[in-house]
Image (cartoon, rainbow, N blue to C red; front, side, top):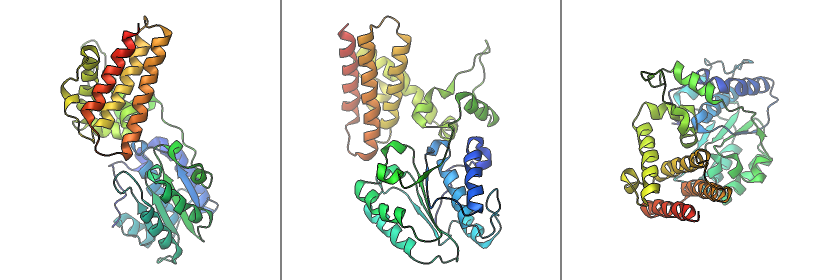
Length: 324
């Protein structure tokens, strides 16, 4: 059984996805869509929901110009999570491995069991290792009749050019900060204003969580408070030179969030520090870039010494400031 629903939001509740889906739906209804679609929409913005709606549309036996019918046998199988012609690939650990892609490509050779389309969704396709990406190339070039490959990605730049050049890229406009605030207000997730009428801006961490869906999840759990703790503890650590509180006990799963918070903190530090000379500003921004690069790198690494890594960035920051 394939569970493709990773959030409680339907596509109709995510207004920034309606236009790209409607565009695909029109093409799919006329059988004019490309056999390979690149979906450059972060999971936190609804990339999984969009891929799911596109997959259901392609599998539907009674399509409409605006989407799947929702009633045919194919739609019912899809909703139940066991459509035999839907192949959903997720990373095995931190990578999508070559055996997963080879098995997928072999499955797509066979005739569709429901006499309709064969659809493959590769979630977080940027996690394909080199061998897996190369194994997919032949299928992207010669997918067979009535086959659709949907490659969702959080970071399109991390895909091989040979992959992206063989896909039609879904046009997508990221919602603005004001759009996201309005959406959160509709979900009743914004904090209450203080006595002066000021409201805490929860969107500061969008660069950490990735988008409004994950921000909404964070606000309804302990995760958002954890991010606030990281921000406060980075500030204290950079001032004292020693790691503080939450940064002393980060797990390998938490270190990426902590580094992304550090990246945002360093950027804000430069923006708010008018007295820094341009050279020091450039070096702090350079350090922030190194932090973000490491946070991306850690998605495919294991057994990292989180405390040593954080302490190293604290020391680098203080060294940069000491140059003044």
